[in-house]
Length: 232
Image (cartoon, rainbow, N blue to C red; front, top):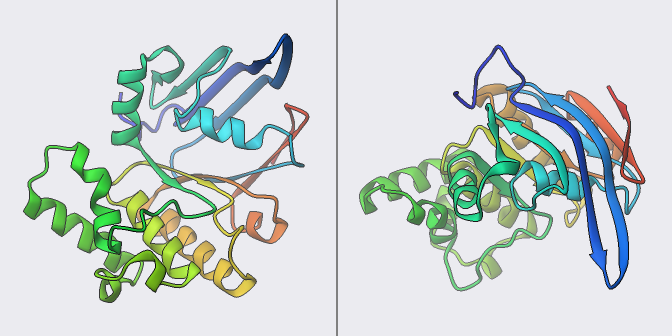
């Protein structure tokens, strides 16, 4: 089934729980989560520190796997995939944006954006065209030969957004994407995410503690102590 199938939610989460073992202690993090996200939606996951919002984001992104329950994305139950299958699924379907950018300092902006494409069958010429297009989209094509330490925080986050976009994923996950930026720069980054959602139809799931950032989303999903307490 296509990631963009219109007859079903893009993301369908049922009876999802996650816990960790720490020493001899059983620590529940998420409890019986039920959530649907439609293609083209932009949702904000909110909640106090320790509420489980980043854990839920990681499960949706296929970075972590649940203790029980189902996560279907585009009709694929990613909880049932092997590590190798999950890595391949992530590379094809998910773009990641992190609070601290996660750019490699020894690579230029262009090389950082190109990096996910090295896992594909694209030729060097095709990779270059895709990376340039992604940098143009975030208005940084004139900085493609600069290294991260030659860029401002806002520019580094825009490079990270270009990297998330370069493989044309349907799903973008963002973990506190404005958390390391000043208010003005953060608003610019949020406006860019809004454009990607409205103009390109990208489905975005964003973790944030900032109500102003959450206002950019179509829906807010609130977690408290691992329980989904509100979804509007």
